[in-house]
Figure 1 (cartoon, rainbow, N blue to C red):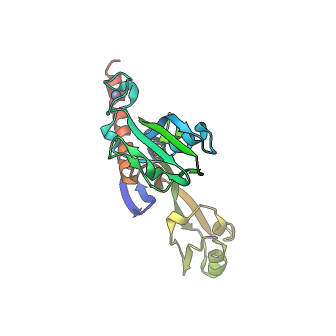
Figure 2 (figure 1 turned 90 degrees about the horizontal axis):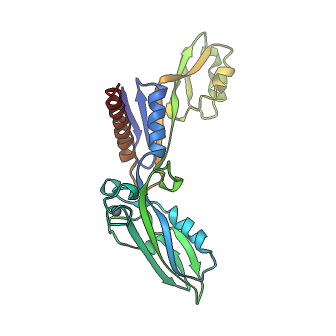
Figure 3 (figure 1 turned 135 degrees about the vertical axis):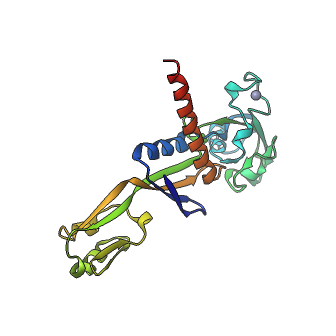
Length: 260
Ligand SMILES: [Zn+2]
């Protein structure tokens, strides 16, 4: 197995080589649904005479990604406080504003300074003169499996494109190159190269105009991954954590096998 990083800034893109679809898909699914993150789960309203109902404001707050270190928290159900609520399983974000003003995610006062909205500019509600909101939002630890607001990332992969020349393509250069909607196939002599493999959708447009001289396939042991964080977690952390969780599952399985 081998990993080659294509892009680190923003969306993490990397090539996973010498692997198989089962492993790639397990990694992708864990990244999407099993990485613990913090998100607001309950909101207690003390006051709200804004234009938006309590439920809508609560829903908007629930979707705000929170910067946090999930390792420092426990899920409420497994916490030593037995569900009463403590600093290990809950973070309280308090909000109090009176209009006229715009209420932003940056207006929250967090009970844990390490836990803050990912961006202070998410708009929650606009208050007119005489309107106000006062609330306490409780953030808890969860995973995408429980609710999509806890989802850490969008993760996907595509098969690495492989090009095989099966005849004389030297006279078809312009036709083949023009057929590619992404303009990423180059023909030099009788050699074909995909210049940006991570941009190839395997649309086969080039193969279709080649009259059987070109064959494009997706390599089932080589994958291009894209990991775009939609939470307060870094994509590198998400990939490492997913591998760790997969490893734990293997260990647990071996342990259970021992009972046979
Ligand atoms: Zn607790």
